[in-house]
Length: 300
Image (cartoon, rainbow, N blue to C red; front, side, top):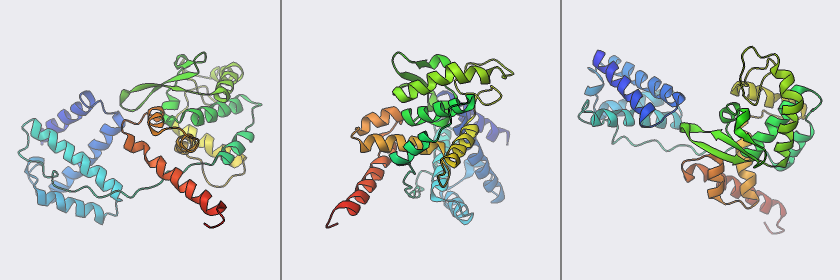
């Protein structure tokens, strides 16, 4: 067990130092490997090094039997494959039992987005007469203007914004920084929030910080807090359903492509390392084109 714990610790250090993985990724890998370790104990397998191909196949059967989705099984399989690849590199294992295990084909889920008319309705419903209202306006404008992730939005600090250039420095996944432009609507909303809203809220903060977006206590806004705010805005706009922060990211990408932006530009703005991650939005735009064609062409 001591040798196994050492190999796990070395793998996590490898992920953090060499692969530059986030703590979120490392925590998920840790959970997946420990679950598999428990499975090997239940099967009477003497340590992770003794696992064979047949054991790996059986584990996939167990995962499907628990009702896990193809996406979850694929993620766990990929994690264990990477772990054993590292073990082989370090001489801790002779073979990778997951090397020949085929990854289940993921169900392709088209991203949910809002139409431009829905976004305009949402912006029109904003109440800008209070500090919190000004913050909500700036938050919504920036998320839609940049397509940044909610975690990236919450980490923005005052010094990250350059109003003269109309850009914001984003600290992305994998510790990759990028500059993202924003337009005049977001600029006006953020400046108004900083001048008339943020200071009023920040006065209540217990600890000093320079985060752009704050909650009613003056502390830095959290991703969970952003979700709560956005759902409140949807209710005020008398719209159905919920507004997940990622829907604004999806809307940003979809609207850019619908209006003629090229895929490479959208990829860079979103901070995707692979263009395949961005290509999902081409399916969305094609679906939209098909709907418009069927609704408007006289012989559709």
